[in-house]
Length: 622
Image 1: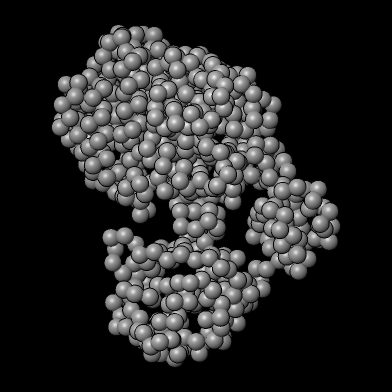
Image 2: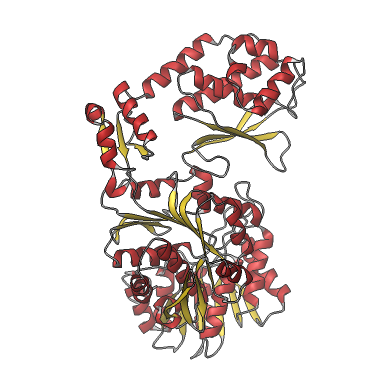
């Protein structure tokens, strides 16, 4: 048995509804061997505590004399042994899952619940050693390693008074975070409703004190989807702050509390969400929740009040065992599954709408749609459901049998005069979430009408610059997958008075078919394209661009001129040289605006000054 990968999923995740140790193991093609007698000799209470039906059936087969091998029962036996070892160490758990890894014979994914991380990891190592000894008929002495495992559990365990308080908190449904590595300091509750508890305070936390804390939860709104998460989370947090509440926010741009950035970078995963939930200055949390964070660490919350699933389309496929859009939808559904109040879904996206089947009973469904006649939306409205949709240029709220025009789409600065339909959709999702959250229509409209998507509030996402010297319109956007490029191309075409030109790329870790699809969809909207290279991520130099160019060449769209220039500065110089007054130039998937500002210095000094000001850059002398 060989460990390929191992990590802790510290909250609800793709495989389990609670925290788990996920281990991918490769099992060698060993000859089958009888296990039952030696297994129960080492672990005599294994059968007594194997309470689920699958475990019971497995052990009955072994007791009847069946042999086991890689292709049958060994991975399942391993999870049982690991679970029993945790119990014997004094850290019992009751949940585990075992799956064959698709397309990789001999590999299995073991997902084991745990009470203590150190105990779970040590128990897995011990379980592997124990089974390897049994399979090879070697003697195995369990007493010493089991004693060491119990010592680990004892070191990690809180003192008795703290343990009693934590158990009382669990009974009261109060979320608990361990503070740092100290086994005797914990946070009970979230945000502004939290209470910090140290060992010396444990005697003061009785039933009355816990009752005063309530459940200790602040409202949590989780935003997921393939495209639009950051913008939607920003608009939503802006609207909440406008209403007078202190809002904590995580996005791919950073962690923010009340608009002040606490951390910079991609902060759409577990630790960033936890940082917001641990901040005492937060009344409401808006958490961008990305695919990578869900797969790597699970969610930072056991449940949220409102989940938003914006869309599901091809991106990051072929990574982390997620090979199809349907797989990706299952990842996004992890967020929806944790919602306790409401789930907001895109009625026009079939993968997204299908997430409704994974929503808990009693949780309200709200839909949003750019198409007021979409069958999913109409069926929902006929049944008295609540929704947000676009009709005759206005954002409309359906609240049961009532319909309310919220504001016109062209009154949303982020909608670029109504041309950026993807941001209208994001605004509809925000309106639906705020409706579910009990905000007034005036608060929704005020937030949508005052959020400006520029490089300060929403860097590299639909940032538009009117370049004064060259007379062109420049759009900077982080589009990096086919769906995002489709939406961006439609918006650019709608804005254009002349040609639409693009400087485009995509990350190299996407599949060949996805890179060709980027080229294919861009060819449908851009008159000219220059493909550059940004992140190879394992590919040879120029390989990513060549695949995108191949997609352009095969498409037969409106694009008549295209080139591959791997160096981004050279690509920008060439594109700017081709631009004429009235053209729209799209610069896609940048990481910063520094290279753009430098390229503009010789072509459009006024534009260079605008970009530098927006990005907080100091331009060097030309």
